[in-house]
Image 1 (cartoon, rainbow, N blue to C red):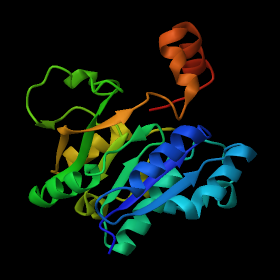
Image 2 (image 1 turned 60 degrees about the horizontal axis):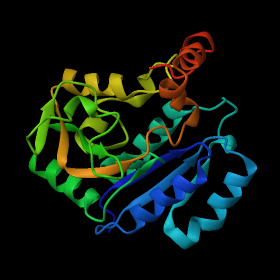
Image 3 (image 1 turned 90 degrees about the vertical axis):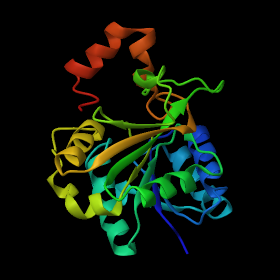
Length: 236
């Protein structure tokens, strides 16, 4: 029986996406994994279809549900919340530039089960050398194995407790935003939950592998901020 609903929003980046899906499929607990294809290229769509049964994930093409241009993170969260509540499962977001370990999902679930007032539980992100990297550089020098934090969690690899899903309806998410990490992190605290980052359950993160244009933040910051503010991309 599945223990958790895992979702992965995808916009191209097929190589990293398939790495993500293969790693999830090797988890040592049973999971239900859904990939949401957010208006990817024809080539990416074909590869997602071709690998669906072989790897073992369900596939939802958002183009069949909406004509709203990518990103459609709000719609993905709304659909996923509804499904998770129907299944009676917590919800785990694993983004398409993240590779989990065999025991990652189990460790997140076990922690949540032992902390009834947890809202969000994130795995710290690391690079290929095992060093803490973006977006959790703020915790790089922390010595504890578990952090209770009031700071924003990233949804790179983050578990939403079933209780939190029942307490806040994602239909209320702001249409003006593209991403909801900061807002939902705050909402969880506002509702009386505690948010955690597991420093001893790291996942490999290739920053912005799912949104390559954001790598301009480090390579060409002027162009990045032009796209962010003038073009209105990446609204948080």
